[in-house]
Structures are given as structure tokens and as C-alpha cells.
Amino acid sequence: MRALKYVTGLLVLGVVIAAAAIGTTGPSPATAAVPVARGFGGMPTVGALFASANGSYHSCTASVVHSRSGNVLLTAAHCVTGTGGGYAFAPGFYEGTSPYGRWKVTGVYVDGGWLSKQDPTRDFAFLTVAPRSIGGRLVQIEQVTGANRLGSLAHQGEQVTIPGYPAGTNNGPITCTARLYFKGLYPAFDCNPYVGGTSGSPYLVRGSHGWTVVGLIGGLHQGGCTSFTSYSSPLGKAAERVYLRAVAGKHGDEPDPAGGDGC
Image (cartoon, rainbow, N blue to C red; front, side):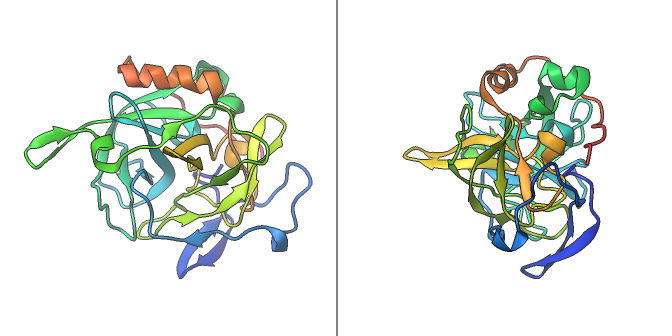
């Protein structure tokens, strides 16, 4: 479970972060050959997800997805519990600062397969956030940060960039660019170290119209049992249906806390 599980420590650009539990679900890559994530200054459409609006500790990652309502985020379903009340999102979070402010979560939307049995192929959630008053007028988050487009299914060999936030307080994001492959139904990539807190990190593909999301860290073993291989639930029509409910502002869901990750 990339949101909570740690067993050791790693130093990345001077930031001490906790590494994910070690275990494998199949043949493991030689870590020496795996690309290494780097710290960077962040991007406005990706940020840290806080379970407490005024808290300092962030435990997952989320991203802004384009919508006509302008208020929709994407994260992993195992990152959120209940109505989302009290959760907050800080886009572009960097070393304790929130350059685009903190946005309060107002709704959680997940697939029925996650609600009923926490199906790992449905480990995605769309969140809505409240507008904020800026310069004397209410604005939606997308007006401030922009947004990534929601794509459909990922493709074998596709090059993706994965910005994410290791769990912590005053740390910054990491990023890596890698090629996708599949572990059964699950789009996967190898890069080290994607650790606790990077759940929900988007798989981004750059195109002529900007970034498109084709996956997110989650799914198989809630994102992976090692720090060097990460998975995503497949998106496609199932994710689109949940997304459309969020955009329409329908009554949200109340998922239970995530169970074990099977590692």
C-alpha cells in the first residue's frame, strides 16, 4: 500500500523518505538497471493529498483533471475514506509551501467494484473540491492550476512521466519518465524509489494539447510491493463513468478504509 507502508529509509536529494515494503509479485528487475527518480520543483496540476485540511503530513498524491465543472481531481481509491470531509489538496506543494493554496475536498466518487469488494482493477477515485475566494471572487481549482486531460486505456511501450509525493511534511515531489508494460491487466512501470505517499500519482503522456492521464499508482497490491515497480488500475469506460458522476456533482460515495495490500 503506497499510502502507508514503510520499512526502511532512503535519501533522495537531501530528503529522507520511507521506502515501501519489500516483496515481489513476479520476476523483479535488477534494481541497478531501473531508472532513478529525481526531485524537482513540482507542477501545478499535481499535488499532495492531506487527510486533514490543516495538517502538515501528506500521505497520497492527486492531480487535477479537466472537466466542465473545473473542480475534479484523480487519486487512488485506497487513499480516501468516507465522504472525504476534512481532506485537502495542495497543488504544486513544495517543501512545506502551498503556492496555489489548499483546496477542501467536497466529494468522493469511486466505482461500485471498489465499494463492494475493493476490486484492485477499480482502485481509482475522483474527488471534487470547493471553490476558493481569490481577488474577491470565487474560482475553481482548474482556473488556477490548469488540468490534465483524462485519457482512456494505457498502451504497451507508451512513455509516461510520473510526478508524485513521497509521504511526509516539508518534502518535495519526485518524477521519472519510463516505458509502460503490463502485469496482467495492470499498466506498470519501473523506476526507483516510488514509496509510501506516491499512491495516486498520475501516469502522464505528453501530446500536442498538453498532458493526458492514462493511469495512476494504485491497483495491484495498491500500487506495488516494492519501491521500484509500480502498478495502475486500468482506466477506460469504468473510470469515465465515475468521472462523469463527479463532474455532474451527483451524490458522492463513502468508501471504507482500504484493506490489506496482499504484499
